[in-house]
Length: 354
Image 1 (cartoon, rainbow, N blue to C red):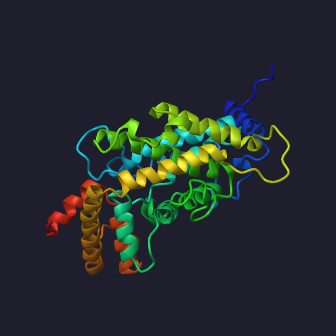
Image 2 (image 1 turned 120 degrees about the vertical axis):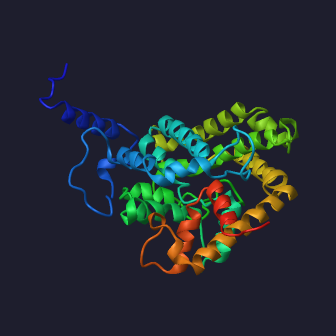
Image 3 (image 1 turned 180 degrees about the vertical axis):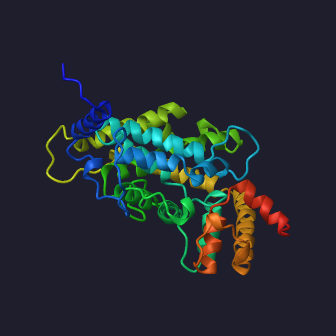
């Protein structure tokens, strides 16, 4: 039995470091972090630096607003549709499961998952497309999420997260062509790569459930190859994808020899099924004609709000934008931070009419 430490909190700190040191040689370790933008006086004895990042995100205003931001269906009627907040929790759960199995750093994966959508605007990807067309500098929600944690939270101070957390958030976006495509950047850590793929695992499956709930499709309408390789039920599909990622990425665990740096991947058969499922969802749900009409209305509201605050920067609430920024940037930050409900209410108060 180990001799008790004179200071129990120092014993906790020692145990936390030992646990991280026991992870895969390819895992990120918080005590080896590239650090924060600003130095801080005291480290925590009872939390690792990645755990501190996670807690800062959970206590942020932007995180709380996710509960009223759309995932796919815009301002849906019903209590069981997925929101950005419930999506975020599902991504975190999948990312932790994969990271734990591969002996990677669960805390970092969870932190990236919880922060990856903080900058998503109202009305899902319809809102994002509208802002990308309007803003001189363009708009991508992953970079806006990074701006939220670096600059906008805490009255312009930001959350001062570690480099690894910020890197994972900034490089979390994907593109349509392939579920394993690099997209707009690849995270430097394996935990970031896990979370990027966990995002796709989560949204593909819960979007199917929402589409079924909305009467757009049934489980039996999913492509035969998808049902054969991934399963016929929600739980089967998630389990098949998660288990395949773990088995295909086993080099990351450090349990076997590898000739090069490991990557997080899927097996070719499951990757093929996942891509077929993504294409099916785009055709039947994301680009469905009825949803396109709904999305165009959402874009009109976002355009109206952005143009109003661009013309009237004095009406932008200071907690959601930075003094001294260009009027376009202030309008972008303010509108992108709105929830669906607040955007709708504000637009109609300002005179918007369908």
